[in-house]
Amino acid sequence: MEKSYLQCVAWANHRDRLKEPITRIGNIANDPHLYSEINKACSNERAFLFLAPDGFVVLWPRHIDKSTFIEVTIASCHGGNAVQRYLRHIIRLARCGNASFIEFATARRGFNKIAPLHGWVRSGERDNLTIWRHFLEVDHG
Image 1: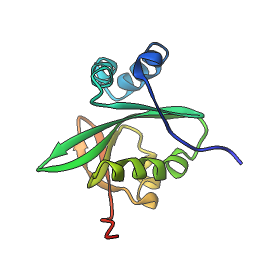
Image 2 (image 1 turned 135 degrees about the vertical axis):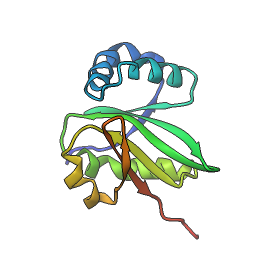
Image 3 (image 1 turned 90 degrees about the horizontal axis):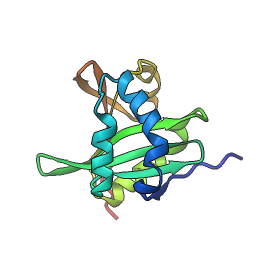
């Protein structure tokens, strides 16, 4: 069975090799400054890089209206079924950070079909990107 896990790693050890894929994704999303924003946030430990066996994700804790949420700033996976395989890990990390929800923005229209199947709710649009949120249930015990 294929392993699915996320490991938090030091940004400084991986930023050079991730510059090209992050820049490419930023260009697709019409965000030419994505790499520099991620580099600054991860270098200052405001955002965190997690490696997977077949990709990576950057999670950035954010705050809005006195609530914490986790922004999936970028995610890249080459093994398929990434939402199904990695969402539970991201949810666990978000709960550890007392987040109310997880948010990501994407230009990929394919998520319109699969995101709702995994608990994501369309939250709006920003700069031609669809915003999705996954609200976390409150754990009472």
